Image 1: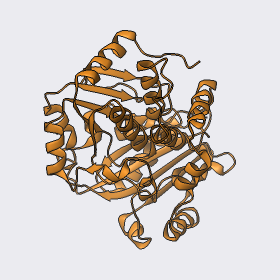
Image 2 (image 1 turned 45 degrees about the vertical axis):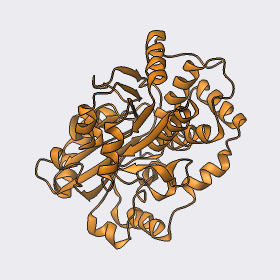
Image 3 (image 1 turned 180 degrees about the vertical axis):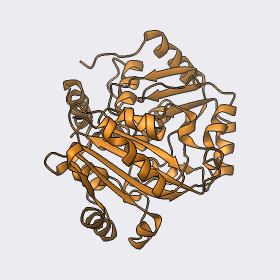
Amino acid sequence: MISSIFDSKAISEAGRLIGSARSVVILTHMSPDGDAMGSALAMKHYLMGQGKQVGVVVPNAFPAFLAWMPGAEDVIIYESQKAEADSLMETADLAVCTDFNTPKRIGSLGDKLLSLSCPKILIDHHLFPDSFANVVFSFPQSPSASEIVYRFIRSLHPLKTDVFTLPLATCIYTGMMTDTGNFSFNSNYPEMYEIVGELVRVGVDKDAVYNSVFNSYTADRMRLMGYCLYSKMQIFAEHHTALIYLSRKELYRFNFQSGDAEGLVNLPLQISDIYYSCFMREDKVNATEVAIAGGSKTKIKISMRSQGDRPVNTFCADIFNGGGHKNASGGEYYGNLKDAVALFLNNYKHYNNK
């Protein structure tokens, strides 16, 4: 039996808000990954099953290797479909936010979210959620927002056996799998596998999901991976740390597409005695980020991973205004790549002391 982690009054209030809504908009974070898409699309399938009109809005494009997910074909991208997204949000009776803890994580879409008069439900697993939602379901101990969505739905329907349809279950499993590196980190507790077992019983083909996510990259992406390891990886053996960083020019050389950087940060951790890995890539500031970019035309996306009892979330929060989980965190730096690398090099040794 999967234990309940939520306050009964909060579940009751969320049930009331869902019950009284006819139209619901679901939002998730910028540069959506598997957990963002999994949690948002799972909520979409659940709410559609409750007879609601539902739309999903993401700040910018999601990776092509997630386009197969049930419901992904109808997702509205704010960066290129702003008018359609604004209309959907302005007519919504309820907004559900998944996999982000502050409106800053959805760029200028955050300003639109805060302007909405409809009630808001937040379902997330990051530390220190902002107080912008009417009801908050935050569980930082969980490695994925998709798992929290599962627990949320199960708490609303503890005795109902048919609420988890195959599309819904597939989305939840995809989010859980991707945010744990195929259950290779932040995944060492029994209830996670009880949930996976229930999803498989619904009919989720876990092997097919893995193949769709991890075995669908392009030849350019494979060449980029080789370039990162051979030409760009720096090892700081004394501090058990690796760093890879890529400029926009280098990304262009390999015909970079959204999602091509997925998993690159994990590669150095396969080296003996490397416990910390950082990956940076340069990107341009898009229309949804102008208000928070401070005049910079470039931003640096930072991803960090670690092994065992070695946190990286504090480093990301302190140095790159980010955060996340102990072994999987990230942040952003608005400025040039050279300065972001210098910031890392000047600070990492004070945190990586194991």
